[in-house]
Structure formats: structure tokens, C-alpha cells
Amino acid sequence: MTNDKSGSIFKFQLEHDKGYAYAEILAYPDCGDNEFMARVFTLIDFELDTKRSIEEITQSGVYLGPLVINKFPSVKGKTPWNYIGRNPDSDFELTPVKNHNMMRLHDDWSLLGPWQLFRGYGFDVSHELLDYEDVRHYETDILTHKDAVPTKVTMRQIIDKGERLSEYYDFDELGNRNLLVQVVNTYYPKQVAQGVLSEVLKAR
Image (cartoon, rainbow, N blue to C red; front, side, top):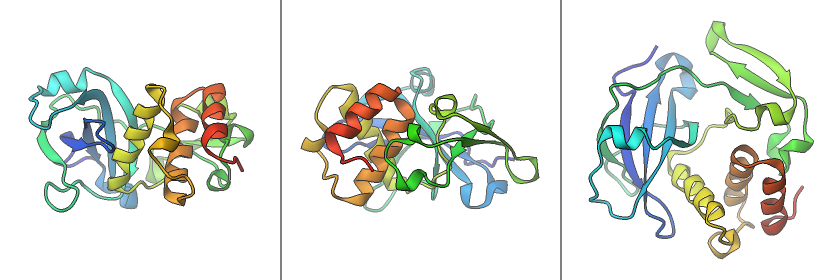
């Protein structure tokens, strides 16, 4: 079940002057604490006032997510997201999510196994055990603070542009470290992920 917040598209500012990204919010009232998910699109603007159509935004493709987020974005406050409109063609089907009970204790998730892949929710949930390379491209069920979404997108932008992450973030800070681990273990192949981890972290 979804509600009238589903399909809402917002524009939000990235960190370190990397521009502005777009995200679609998917709302699932029956999922309890996992009620909201954010799907970030590939399109990046460098001016807040740049006007885009909903079709232009959504057809750029999914760049990150869907991420389970802690709350619906606000258009006010210290970190406001700008409401753009609603996607009339939104796909509300729940995407499978991965989980391993040791993932928060390790940087290189490919060393862990087997992983659980969950489909559905509530009484309709099912899961199977798989090797990590079979679930790598799926997001986790980790609850992400809404304000951490720009950080994740920015980190991926920096990696994609071949820049040094250590010039932008302090990875002695646990929050930054955890977000980077989540990004590289999901959106990059094993060799690339291990290269990034060895460059900026002392892998656990």
C-alpha cells in the first residue's frame, strides 16, 4: 500500500559545491519504521533555479537507491528539500534489500557471506541466502537519515570523477566512514570498491 506522498520529487543540494540532485520519495505506510524510501536520479544541476520537467528527471535513470530513509523531506528548516512535483508514472514496487548481521563491523562486504536478500514486507516477506556478488547491486535495509542522502550522492560523484575522497571528507569520523562503506560496496564492482577502501580507510 502507498499513500499520496508517494511519487513526490524533490531537488536538494549536494555537498562541497557539487550541485543539486533530484530524488523521488516512495511511501509505504504498512512498512512501519521503513515507511519512506528515496530514489535519487542521475541528473545533476549546478543552479538551484534550473527548471526541469518530471519526465526529464526520471528518464535520466536511477543513480542511488532506493534508500530507506527516516522521514519525509521537509521544505523548511536547516536542510530543506525543494518540492518539484509528483511523478504520475511512479513504480511503487518494493525493491529487494540485502542484509548481513556483520556488515556494520566490516568494510569489505565481499568477505562476508552468505547474505540475505529480502523481498516484500510484513507477512508477505521472503528471503534467500546468496553470495555477495549476487546481491552487491541491491541496497541494504539500513535506515538512512534524510540528511545523509546528499552525502552519499556527493561521495559517489567524487569517486566517479576520479577525485580523492580524502580531500573532501574526514574518515576518522565514523559517520563518514559508514556512509562510504555502504556506497562503495553497493555501486561499484569488487576491484573498484577495494581500491577506494584501501585508499581512504584502514579496512577492518
